Length: 281
Image (tube, rainbow, N blue to C red):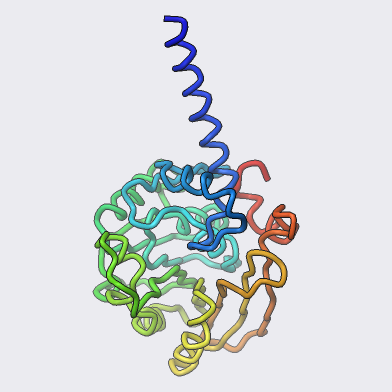
């Protein structure tokens, strides 16, 4: 009995430590790019954990095809929210970005749309359990068919971006990651129609398609206001690009964000961006 009790206690401690480690180390997951190979186990722990705990809210993602990852965290922390009162999150998934923006934009009403019923249901639950349940409206709908009288000061999306890769055996994950259901062209065209006169669109994209998306945005009459290149470590090629477009002319800013130092510690720049969200920062 004592041995069994010790085993139960030990397993409980392991589970607690695993939760804290996966919360602390999720940044190592960067959409299939890893900072260090010896942290693959920690990546596995995070991806198998059914929820991710932030400072002010918890995101359950076990029923979502795409789990909490760095792309969403970057977008939720980077997108500008000053003066924003209406906000649209396209392809909200677990509701991560909508929750982060609700924390930052304290007066904003947020609509979050998601095509997958399982993810939409979980996003609704995450919103209801958050401090901002009265300001987040999750809708299960295809964005191509989304209708509203609202016009939005900010539209954000971590969009699907694979158009020519092999079919994924998980149909829900394929829908979340492939642009067959919602192309970037379609996303931009629908978003332009839903923007308020001074509205903005913020996206996080793979670096290799950011230029193409920029060209399409310009064709639709949008202006690039900010572009941030994201590197996992110094001197690495950018893996992601954060883009901000607007209808009105604004100051064009170009910068870069490095997530970790050569010693794999978070950079002060990254800490400053996410410290209001990540535990232990």
